[in-house]
Length: 437
Ligand SMILES: Cc1cc2nc3c(=O)[nH]c(=O)nc-3n(C[C@H](O)[C@H](O)[C@H](O)COP(=O)(O)OP(=O)(O)OC[C@H]3O[C@@H](n4cnc5c(N)ncnc54)[C@H](O)[C@@H]3O)c2cc1C
Image (tube, rainbow, N blue to C red):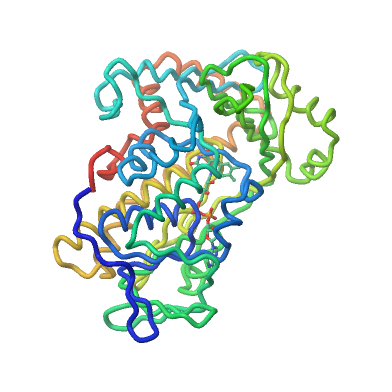
């Protein structure tokens, strides 16, 4: 990248000055910090959780399916190197198998079937088809973000730090932190997740509902290799995903489970002793992986859908779960947030090239127009799939099994779904296409 860099955030009187202030240094917020700083902006990112706590193994037990388009974007901002530098941590997803309960109906997506040029990574050797994506532990992504942030002199991470309020002045926003520090920035990015305080403070309404489902997440060790296949099974209570992970240091084959369950039953499942919990796991996973046992802690995440009525306000823009949160049925929530980041970075870079104020309403409106359709579409698809498959109502069961057959037979439809899973559909930002900002 050959941008002319803004200096590290400066002090003016008692206020720190930066081009952009990012509130919320989670996986989306800090990726935005890295992308914008890599593009030459001076950035301050803050998070209320101390950095050490965020990097601790106990902070987040999930893995993320990083779609091919997201991986390209992470490569483009110098982050993917830091993922790979942690060793054997990113498992390619070569196949996806979607099945309907205990029926024999399933759809098989094979990344090797996508041999068109568009689906190929610029960096992948021609003989090697690009996988759908990679399964990476969230703690690995967080560690990569912290390492990349350290390399960028024009990115300052304040954690722990909490925002007290923001006032808008004619040429900038002035933010006050609870510890008394003040930050002056042309643009404030809200990346505080579903309960965004900045979104609430600006009176931005949201559409939201809770699913009567909670995701139980745990890692399993299994006797046979998974072969890079991700399984999504639609059980009557909700989807059950088996996601291929890299083998551990002892060579044990591992997968991550995202087991959707009725919320009321989750405490009882989490409290089971290991033998009984493993028996429940085996009942759902089956025997195709040989002997299976759970390893490490069990986690639970209540599920909900949220969509903000607008993504912008005066000198404010929403990204990631602060703007939209979706059911994890398709493993796309973080990928949407990463596409927000890629689109926002491109919008701001182009505005800067034209000499425009990056906090200018018209500039931000461009970002919102760009991202709304993709986010609403995925919210609708994931909500619809969850409803369609979490039912044992016979006509719907028959309809979806016929749907499976139709998808298996219709080549172009299958290809479209595969390219969707790779995050390669729609008006892609330059970073997601593997191009520089
Ligand atoms: C079970 C499960 C599995 C999933 N699997 C996948 C997957 O495979 N692929 C995928 O793409 N997506 C997946 N997702 C979705 C994905 O995890 C989320 O979309 C993503 O983590 C959102 O990141 P974020 O940074 O926007 O928000 P968050 O992760 O919520 O981060 C917000 C950050 O802001 C900080 N913060 C909050 N309030 C303040 C404040 N007032 N001041 C300062 N800091 C603040 C918090 O400490 C936090 O660090 C999954 C979700 C679930 C529940």
